[in-house]
Length: 210
Image: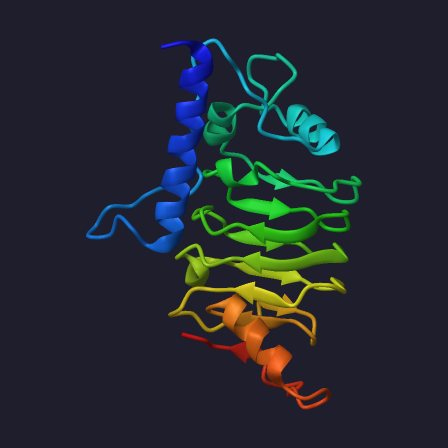
């Protein structure tokens, strides 16, 4: 088997495992990682495409072999905090591999789109405030009740934060008035689109959809 064919098969396997995890296939006690860490020996691959984010992680000591890139195994081994405020970071793609961090603070950056933190089960504190192009966050990591703080304010585009089904946010969980806590963000977005303009309650910010 050539290296090229092996790489293609490895990529197909990763995609298949991700789809199975997202669709619920593989139940019965089998826990499939939606973001598996699969590395090829002697072929290190950088998992952090944002150059600013990568350099800041290098500054934190994540790049243990000093080769100028962040690999999946290096991310998995890191057990410190990630506090990177006002750095101009546009993407924290690759953050899903930092399974042992307890704090993530990326206040006042330029992070955009959807952010999935559901696999980071050791998080105790999260600060995503000041990222005006962030649209949604999956925070349903099964450990919401043990978190000390979650902040996502001054985020003009944020509409939904997905939380654990058994959890009700307390005063340490803060989002803007136009955003919503939900157990299923996609369903809540559909419900909001179907509502008449101006009819959405300003006080009912916990949209529990099952």
